[in-house]
Image 1 (cartoon, rainbow over the protein chains, first blue to last red):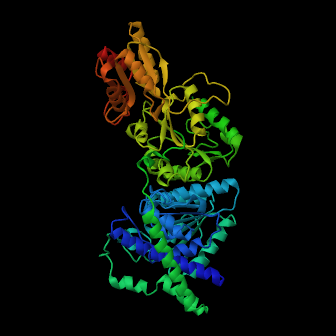
Image 2: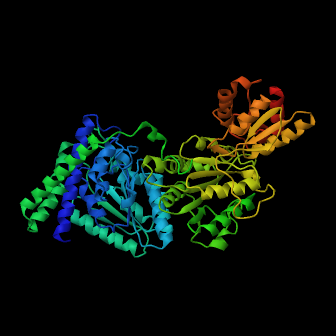
Image 3: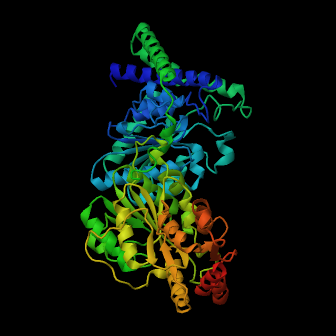
Length: 318
Length: 319
């Protein structure tokens, strides 16, 4: 990876972190409503894996979608405006935090019914396979989704039809408030893919370069026409499942332990070791801060949708 | 009617290469009810595909494929199994366009069968398409004749919206003329008057249209002329011909195969009261299935399902 790319990915992680910290603040002020699930701690997973895609590869994920959306290239302005329910948001204020999407970036959305988008991913992948293209679909989901029927139906169909799909399990240790060991018969989620004859791998989700390398390998395998691939990424959710979750079910010590291995801090060290000057990194931090401030201002100044907007986009034909 | 369906799909597949057919046993087997017979041989294994018995992912893959440029005609073998796919149908097919601000399209047909009368007992005999018709974002259609099945299915396949196409399971062997020509396409969201009459308005859809027509024929012998309106579409629901008829007859009976509580009859009756209150000569009657899980034993099943004599009795009640 060249230095420019390393700096780009570093900045992307910082933008995700800052955007979400700002969202937390706006949520507490009542400007953002509904459910909101933060990605903080998992930045290297989305950034590392998405950066390995070709721009025409599909990405789809669950409701913890802010980081993946930014990694796909969505602008903080469009995301922040959606969070605030503004008409300038990516979904015109109809989707909110859990349903970010940008069809032009082949980001097919955050989806909020656990596991349901795994089934959608098989359809996305099938359409490209049918067209004879070598486009690959990256389907992200949490380890909690591996206990629902869709996961098993989706992986099975993908294997039977040899669909060009990389299933990326972001194992952040908790499904809502429940630790993985209490919810899943096997804690290594990739073992479940073995049952469908699917090759797979595991990567350290706090290490951006490890995620990137594992994703490159996975995508190459699938693009070559070998059928689906399963990548489990071990990561950690610093915040609660959603806003308002005070995390009484886990020890502060555990959170601190993971934070000591923070993906952004760790990658910053990689950059410094590679000889990149601290000043250049600090400049990126500043630029990210400015971008988020601009996004907030843009969102705040944007209008809410007109009331008659509710009747639009329900059907293609009336 | 099975032939009308396979003909409609075949004609559309010739016209548009992005149409794909998939579901349980739809390929070489030609469909559990023969409604996809011949498609596999004609269009090949890439366009006509069998799936595992996995309703959730059948519907989900259909939505994903529709978002990404295909025009899937998926089959869920029975509407009773569509409960397993209900999340995809009502939470995804019906919502991906609006919830994402119009970015995504979903040109999709999900064909399924509905209805009782085959001694399949309670979990395999339900008539529940009205549940799906509750959801804005979906369209729901249920034809009453082979000709309608062909024209409505072609319209559904050409539509850019997600459509649940409901075939009554005992009607596959129904005979009737099937209009020729690839351009026989019926309108979306329009009901159809199947018989003219000045005394009572009968409102039905799917199999209950033929039950209502039989009742109308018998009543005609007694000098009572019924108008029979076939709703065809449960969503969008077109009640204009119903109101028009009711303003002449001042009396109405709604006939549905499903249970009466929260059913199609409830909706139609409410709308008649709202729109035609001044024309009302008698309370709207509803003919429906008895409110029990449908039993296996033939006599019990017949007893529970709405029949011609029930319709006649209801018509007499409003006279």
